[in-house]
Amino acid sequence: MNSATASVKPTLINLLDFDRKGLQVFFVGLGEKPFRATQLLKWIYQEGVVDFEVMTNLSKSLRQYLKDNCHIQTPEIVAEQLASDGTCKWAMQTHCGNKVETVYIPEERRATLCISSQVGCALACSFCSTAQQGFNRNLSTAEVIGQLYLAQQRLGPEHRITNVVMMGMGEPLLNFDNVVAAMNLMMDDFAFGLSKRRVTISTSGVVPAMHRLHDVCDVSMAVSLHAPNDELRNQLVPINIKYPLAELMDACRAYAQNGPRKHITFEYVMLDGINDSPQDAKMLAKLLKTVPSKVNLIPFNPFPQSQYRCSEMATILKFRDILHNAGIVTTIRKTRGEDIDAACGQLVGQVQDKSRRHLKLQAARTTPHAI
Ligand code: SAH
Image 1: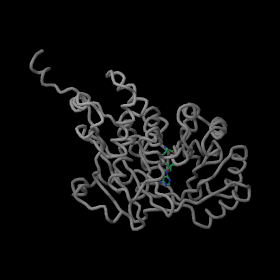
Image 2 (image 1 turned 90 degrees about the vertical axis):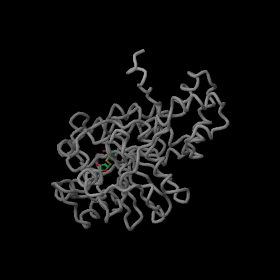
Image 3 (image 1 turned 90 degrees about the horizontal axis):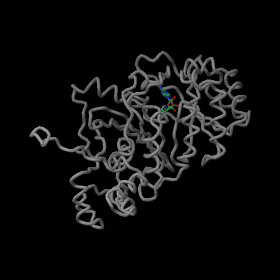
Image 4 (image 1 turned 30 degrees about the horizontal axis):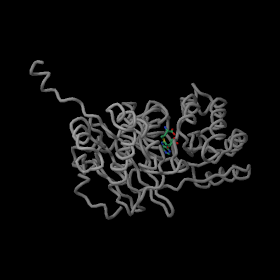
């Protein structure tokens, strides 16, 4: 071995990259019993312990092996914005310098964390600010679950996160394996123990992955619909060209039959003069007639360079009433975090722009009392 090779440190294994099954395979590969997996999960996710020395129900030699070869690495919070309504948005930086967003939305009876699945996004939805950044890479399982781990740590036990939505940056179904492993951890009783009704994956309609999902991971499903016909949806959500509405609706019907909620939530962003007419609402009601559905109307969140305006509230209400009258449960998403940059992708854009203007906050130095 020459000296250059000798000095290369072996890459450490990040144990946040494994769900329970993955950890069992890992431990069995080391000649250990599979139950080591649940012991480790409890230490990490329930006790918040990342120092292997403290994990005293593991043998001394196993602890030493883990110390030499593994680590528990989350992304790092590099910016934090707290809105007056309690919504909190973080820019989280991965070890290689990429930044993604995570948003905490407290409500009366639940507290939801919105998690990112990719750095940027490849899907080019015309109204989305993440789309403007283009696609960089998939997040690892550790980087997905690390957002929940870090957010819960930052908030403290008195602000328990009760729901997770995969509605941050990226298309989660295009990062299938890593997102599924992370969602398994969210629902694992030895990790976060959230019920499958409280974990929601949001997709723009990656049809083959929707079919695959219900075989491997039983979570609630939201579909970003945004248009009642192919012509308009091709423009707003271009993945529709590949997987048009007829195929998407088939996948929704199949998922709803087996899914934990027995219905699909359809997200519909309200764009002034684009998709918000009474005719659009009627067409939407017709499209959804044969799918167990709920509709969530989302007021468009403008961002610099966006070519759209949000529909008037009167138009949104009228749209909702038409759907209601057709028997479809329809909600209007409450706008949260209005005094911070709430639209998807905006905080990261700002951090990138202003990093030289001392925007970076050291999370450890600020106190979480206001959250
Ligand atoms: N790629 C996934 C998840 C990320 S986007 C998906 O498409 O579902 C989460 C939701 O926010 C989607 O419904 C998306 O269409 C919507 N969204 C994106 N940009 C928005 C904006 N500027 N205003 C309102 N909703 C937006």
